[in-house]
Length: 60
Image (cartoon, rainbow, N blue to C red; front, side, top):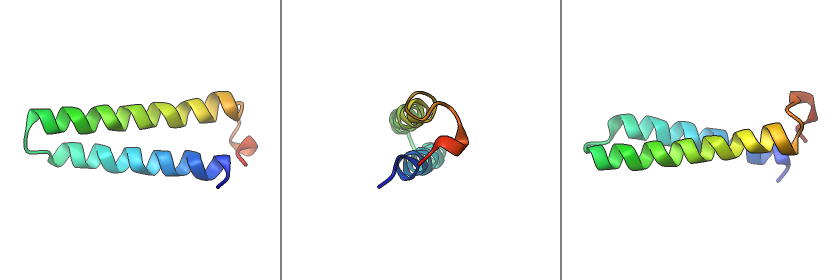
């Protein structure tokens, strides 16, 4: 799995968690899913910005 694959997968999972958060039936469920989505989104951003230099052409 390339760095690009990891980045794209993390983004996709974060988006799915955000969608699930919108459908959560409780505040606790919403908060848990939102927190998880934010964490994965932040992780993807770190990979993009720091490991890959923030250059879309640099994603392998």
